[in-house]
Image 1 (cartoon, rainbow, N blue to C red):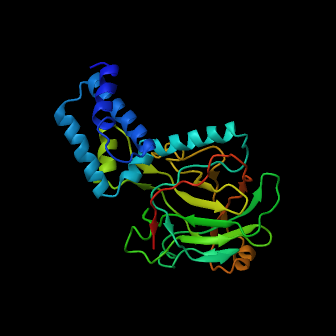
Image 2: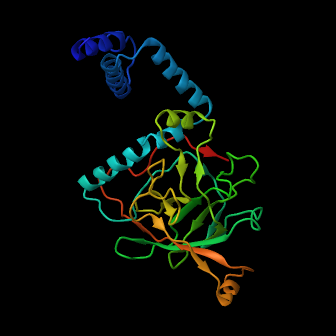
Image 3: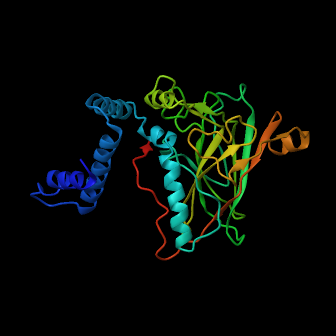
Length: 306
């Protein structure tokens, strides 16, 4: 079939058969995607067995709850970020901390505090380095933002996230910190490590077929929001990781690379009320003011909630 015949067939099957109320947006998207799929079947001579294997794969990925991971691994989530950047630019929105992917492992409802939070439950304090992350939230002109909501989450020393990893305590390495009167937040936690896709999982199975690895560098995720400002979804990746610029999820961006420095000064250790040297990362955030007719910075998607 040529494209004209394909489009007529799709319309006949999915538009002309409508007998009740129609969601026109859903219909528009489904018709377009089906037409593109049928055209790909024609162009690539995709065989029936291959089509059904593909459907079986999507079924397995859904049952494994890995479709969110797959969206990151195939670059879909990064592509959406690039489109959002372009939409912002067209609306005259510039500056601020760069956005990057959310990933599939956020959990709503983390404990909230003002200015400071300890993120870890102490279960790994003798296994990994202590880390202090701190920064200031400002607008693009340098004005501090008091009460900004800084949601932070990251993996443990095995590359696993609480809630999804049932061996961890509730909300381990997940906190919400409201910036203090100086616009500052401080998180006492442990050094995260990079992780790989589940080796026997559906995402890695496809990446293997594509000749790709499924590894991420060590990183820390953020949502940052405040009234009158555009919500920021971002993360920093940590300098020195072998996958820093080879992130399977394509999340590393200029402006989002953080350096962890070693702090061994005894006076500073004591000031932080710690009993051993620690690592320190500064990650400041600039929020952009909301603007009329600007594209939404909120992304509606299903998220876990504990």
